[in-house]
Image (cartoon, rainbow, N blue to C red; front, top):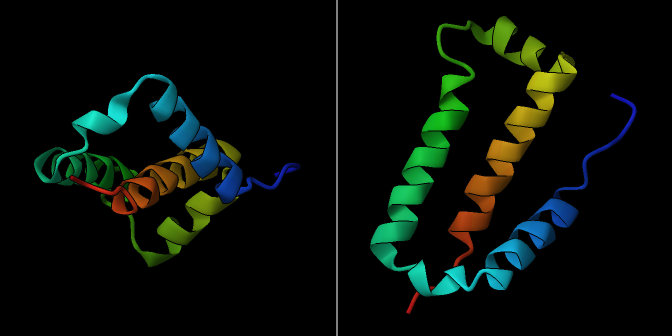
Length: 84
């Protein structure tokens, strides 16, 4: 991978994207928990039916590594949401 993904930049972009659309008002405990479950499932799906070695090898595939990092960032950004 030629470019290193900066997770902080991605988190900042996600927060800005959400703020521009005034989505924070939808971040109730139920909605955040539901979204976290869905995003976690999308992350887990990438590892379905792989063994330990295959799961580690996915990170050597640039496309899969970007997907994994993106889903991980989505999960991370949800866990930091402040809820009313």
